[in-house]
Image 1 (cartoon, rainbow, N blue to C red):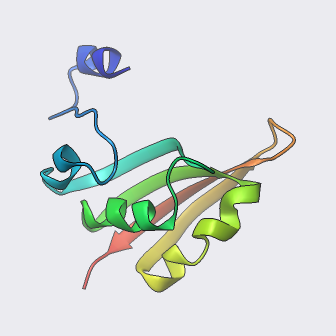
Image 2 (cartoon, rainbow, N blue to C red):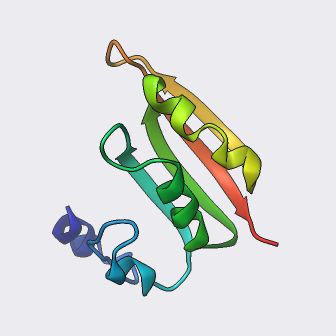
Length: 108
């Protein structure tokens, strides 16, 4: 997918890494992040969601998905941090619906 994204010629940089690994910690702040299929049982949870937020510039954007059964694991993060919900949608494509969230991130 990174090679397909690179072929578009619209991204300043593309990095393949896991949230929390050394390469992730060395990234510059960005204006937005899209994380689809990341927040799920056995993958990433509340701590990783907080870490992702730290990589976003103030008033940057974060879009992410989570299955409905995983929402209790991460639901407190947006309320503990200074996030503004811009939009959300529910996709009923599985027996466990997928929720799509679009937030503006604010840092103090």
